Length: 274
Image (tube, rainbow, N blue to C red):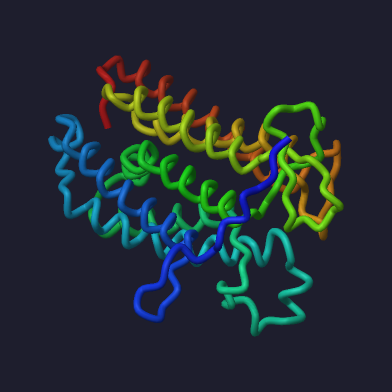
C-alpha cells in the first residue's frame, strides 16, 4: 500500500510569484496542442484544404477561452447550481477551484463553431483537426490532479499493490484507487494513441470527432467506477455518478457521428474527404 507523496502545490517561485504545478500542467497542455496541431494541419489532406499554422494558433486562443469559461460555468450549473444561485458573486472565483470537463467541452464546441464561421471551415472539419490534439491536454490535467492530491478514488482492497492513502481525504487512512492515474492513462495516454493512429489517414468528416467523443465517454464512464463521487452529489440513478451520466450523451453522440460519417461516405461513393 502506498501513501500519496504530498507534493507542494507550488512548483517554484518566480521572483515572489508562486508558480503552481497545476498552472504548469495547463502550460504543458497548451504547448502540446500547438506542437501536435502543427503536425496535423501539415498532413497533405488538411494542407490542401487551406489549413495553416496560424489556424492552430487561433484555435488555441479560442480553445482556452472555451475551456476556462465553459469549464467554470459547467461546474456551476452541473454540480452546484443551488449554491451558486445563492452566491452569484463566487461564480467567477475560479481560484477557489471547481472546473467541469463536460462544461469545458461545451465551451470549446462553441468556440470552435465561432472559429469555423470566421474562417469558413465546416464545424465538423475543425473538430476532426482538433480532436487528436486534446487527449495529451487531458493527461496533463489529470497529472495535475494527482500532484495536488485531489479527486481521489474510491476505497480499494488494501492488498492492491498500488492502493494509495490520500491524507487530504481526512478519512483515517483508507486505501484508495489512484483514479487520477487511471484517468491519465485512459482518457489521456490510451485515447491519444487510438486517435493519433486513426487520424494518420484521411477519414470521413466527423469520424475523428466521433471517435473522440465515444472514446472519452467510455474511458470516463469506466474510470468513474473507481473515482470517489462528489460528496455533495453522491451517486444518482442506477448507482451512476454525475460524471457517468454526463458521459452517456458523449458515448451515444460519438457512435452516431461515426455511423453518419461512414454512411455519408458510402452514399457518395468517394474516397474519405471533407
